[in-house]
Length: 377
Image (cartoon, rainbow, N blue to C red; front, side):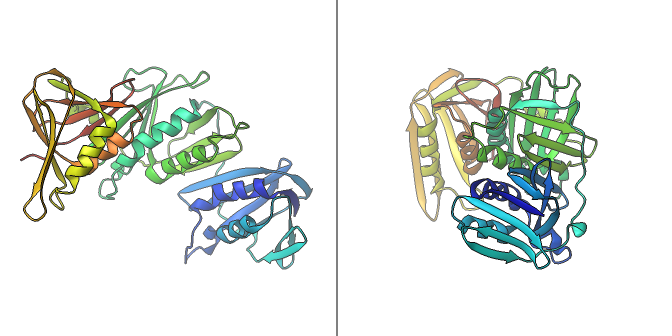
């Protein structure tokens, strides 16, 4: 193999794919990146057997070939090279990297030992705006359960055209203590049929990382292509492709826990609310993380107390619709996570009482809601 490209292009490709590679005592090859000339460029691929990421690097192919080398080592070395031309040549000793008068040989393993990455059809898939999907992942994926006891909650549930939401993707994540739901518009050209899947949290976070890496790249397309099989998904964005296994389980009917009607709606400045919760969190009970929210004619009182550290209370000016004189206690971490995921100046808290879930939404715009279960006193 003999391939030439710019240091910038090679480093960007390596930074995208090397993230999922890692040390594996049983399969050392999983720490390697597969370099393979293809379609006039160089295809970089890594896999952890659950997920695979590949990226095409533009350049000039002098001689076709393929080889694998440690992904992190190659990325670290290429990052030290000056900008300009880099040549990759496979010799009997390994991969020779030539740049700016220097030459380095990286020993690797033959490509025949690299796991086979499946090729999935991209026909009959869905199209989504890349920026909208990136935002949605940031608003949903953090609510995934970290416990392995319920695998159906360890990923993001995706419902295409689901729940009578035609031409929309509904993304949902929950750990049974809080739930995040986001609606994303499907682009023209999407398959008209309903589909659903549960994408592992790490794969969804990896998609978000890829979209963030190309956020300001004017050469990338605006749309993401997303296709499904019974057990796998493939996400294509420009010259990057991610394939992941799906979680084969049934996601619970989460809509049953969301109240159909709330009796109070409080609208408050997001920054002020976040600051008040942070102050109250300093005096919350360790392990319980409880902060009390009390709605009255005077505003929204946020308080906490602990016999060891003391007590705190802040009253915020709010706009209230419906009933007042409401009290609810919530885990401050869960509330803070939801507020941080909203980019609006104001947020709305919808309440019934201290025994029912609280719904937090952006005050402006629709399509996102965050549910927090109360701490029952």
